[in-house]
Length: 545
Image 1 (cartoon, rainbow, N blue to C red):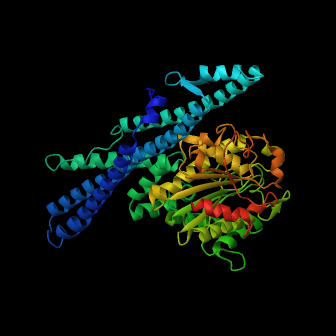
Image 2: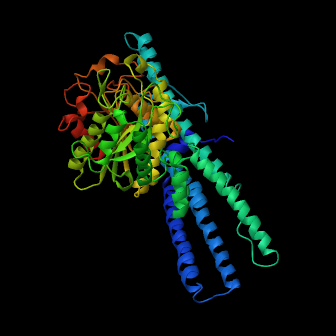
């Protein structure tokens, strides 16, 4: 059933009660989890332990309390935290972002002497009679009216995109909340006649539910918040078994804690190097992340790895071309950071470790990520900052390949999922400040990622030397992060200036309307060099300083 949310409804809505509900629900869920831990620890493990009550009946009572507590904890994670809490919070975040975008657009409509007409789903922007009268009085009224109507169509396109995202979020939340209980496992049976048979049936149903949930989580399409909630609900022994049995799914799965992904990916990389001793890329990556004193940053974490052999696992990675690698390396633990930058390199960045096709290799892009973090450290004055070099999707290998938007559109969902995963696993929760930094073709992919799924878990976007934002976000005001949080950096000597209109409007154009950021006067790769004007600016944007 579609929503009837109108632009007037969204512009006037008081969303603060929704925000308070999300916060109070999270607090309530946390308190209930602590209560469940007291049941299993203080009560079952101490007060009602075998030291105080030792009999078959006591054993069964303890087992029953354990089942109830375990079921309660599972429901808190799966339903209370994810399906209710995360859904409410995501709805608030999406609606508030689109409300801000809508208010900015309304200001432009009023300033331009336009008017919004139409009903929900068929809104349109047209010229007011006053504006038409003024334009018809000009020297060239035909051209003046045509230009104004072009402006109205652009505003109309943005309006419809904003409302589509808001309505989709509203419908998705209603669907999730409306389906609660449809897949829930019944509570453990009551003590009494037929109890043994009932317990056996309950445990069989529970095992089937857990197996189905495990398959859903490991399949690669689950929401990262759901994955994080599921992982948190598992016991330590269950997690260890999963890491052992499903390592290749766990290591690239968004919503899994970064430390777990790092350890699993390092195990995989060590095995890969042993099996492929002449693969210089793999050996160089292993040396770099392990901490080779000559080449490494002490705190590097390997959060994603896809080797370029055709029969390898592809969890969390788009189909790859040729000998391209999929690599995600962080300069520290994103789960512990106050500010996280997700840096997406461009064309040819996944083809070699050093240099290929006159392009820097993956090793250089890791260095660039370290430079961004260093600049963020200088700008923030004590905050914990981490930059992630993200090559989790296949990049075009050559400039002709980069003329296609296919790579950007395929990678957008993966980048969006990873960013959502950072938000889901970070200890600060929704308070973590995430900035997506897309360079060159990576900027185009970043723009498409912002439009994917109706909201962006990032707080800001920087398009660095990008050929364009693609077609999903025709202007900065259309971005889910809000126009005020869209930054554009382009040196006057960057060769990318000759590729304008390749992927939508030129990022520096007035029509796009992004915030122009200081990038210095170097070439296409100079933005990320240590001490450059570009990297210093990125550090300031990433830390919101």
